[in-house]
Image (cartoon, rainbow, N blue to C red):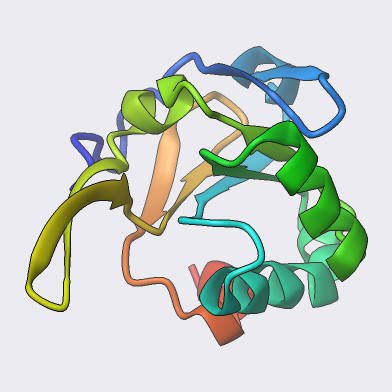
Length: 151
């Protein structure tokens, strides 16, 4: 779905997290960034994904990664998702879909024969220079950290 490829410069995004703090690509220079896009907070697949990342957060952090989740949910919904699952990383509330569109993860999806617009679950690994080093489009929600660490 995304128009981005490995080796491309990551979009210079700017978005607000659950607390109202702005995050942008330049905040993560000199770090490796995992930016993961998920369809909807508190749904089974998304909960499995964030909990797997939470459970492996220290390992990812020790490998030099920062984590940032993004969905079109409101800041309030993102905060409830964080509180309910004890998440140690921020979640962008991209209600206007600017970050989603910048990464090319918003678009047509099919479910039970119906087509609708939604978020394609995708993870981008961005290196210290702001270049996309990997894209995971077939996310294993219950084992996502292992997918990242195997790269």
